[in-house]
Image 1 (spheres, helix red, strand yellow):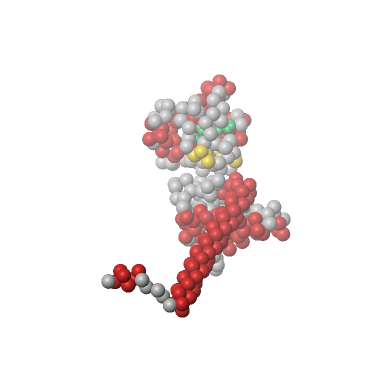
Image 2: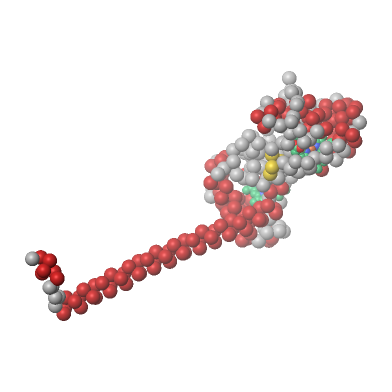
Length: 299
Ligand code: HEC
Ligand code: HEC
């Protein structure tokens, strides 16, 4: 009965026009909704792409101008510059220095005008001004991009033990630990470090600025850490004391490749492997004696 009614149903002319109009409007509305959604989607994608391009440009500027002092990953380099990628930098630095605005404006301000006075004797260099108007090499927009690049680290701050934090104001001039005076043999060892060209690749505070191999500032402490590490046990290294470790690092640098250098992962085969042939045994002893004083706890 109902089926028959549906089959034989003939809508009036007005109903048919109305139905046609309604479906037309529904289709148009549907097109508009998807169209707008597509457009928003396209704009968001473009916006993200644009933002990433600016960050990428900032990365280039950073590697060119900042990495040699602040490190490729922004972990800082001893004596050269503090970390720009640690949680402390992102969460506390603005408050620590009493800056009354955002971290972005702090980074931009320091980068543009530099820091003419060292805030601490721990720095061997001063921060140069980077803005072209102040005699630096960068335009305003390049500095904006470098700020974007640094702020992007906020998503994954680095907090490893080797991060070089900027000292808190007030702590900055706390006296540096007095170095233990070197013996005559150790003084000779220090000269051998320079005369053999080790300084081209290694940094020691106040002695050398090389940045290809690891900094040797805390070599004794690092050696202790390495010989008990899993990485070392898995390597061909055979040292059981820091002195043995230091000797092995010099005469057989391939035995254990230190994982991290200032420019990223340490390259294998870069440190010359023939020092056992070129440095007389007695000199080698003095060199190792000197290097063992770096980072060795005083009684
Ligand atoms: C010649 C080495 C050197 C270069 C190159 C350098 N910096 Fe620095 N930077 C320093 C030193 C040293 C300090 C700490 C100075 C002080 O506190 O007295 C510092 C501090 C900073 C700070 C403040 C950090 C804090 O925790 O307060 C920022 C931000 C900064 N640098 C950004 C940059 C940027 C961006 C570049 C590249 C455009 C750059 N620096 C290039 C040496 C350098
Ligand atoms: C051409 C660059 C270069 C020169 C020159 C060089 N080194 Fe190295 N050195 C490296 C690199 C890279 C490493 C890390 C890779 C490895 O472990 O072999 C390293 C590692 C070391 C280590 C281990 C450091 C650690 O943290 O465990 C010591 C110690 C060392 N070198 C001492 C010396 C001494 C002493 C001289 C000079 C007689 C010297 N190096 C010359 C590049 C160099």
